[in-house]
Length: 225
Image: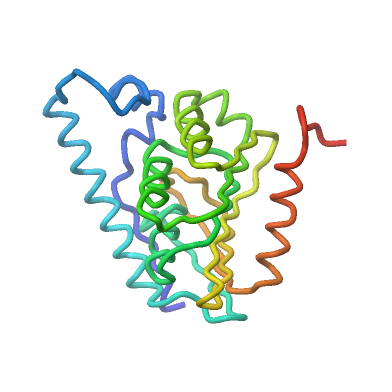
């Protein structure tokens, strides 16, 4: 248990108050604006950037390298890093991912923007898709629209339905990497105890990819029997 460390950072107050607060503060999802950021906005952006760097450093201190083929890592963390932190960290290790699949109940604007930054930098190649909860679509329509429109421009897929799954799939076949991240957290800044399992197993990766594709193939509204 030497690697288990309970440590609570100060939570991001924008996440505590909800993404609706961010939408009011920063305006709509457009990348173009004629407004000048206030000093408060600049300070908040600087804090958020520093927090992301600190989270990645905390993860790298705990996990020195990605799991080897056939290996799984089990991690418990209390706000030192979040679910999204795994994505840029693992992609740095494997160079780039040939596809990206993500299932989450909800997400924040920052993780969506960072995902598109990875896409545009050539770090996420090929097929990408998100399965999301209808709660997210209804509660955070601006962030959902930002994600949906960005995926449409890049050939990705999105589907919202009654789900609470949290799974991310990455792969780099040339490096024998078929990475599955399973956990309790969403793509938000969660000031809570969260658990993660990161596996490098092609059979497990293919298992998850199959039901992702099955969900994307469904037409119209989906209802559980």
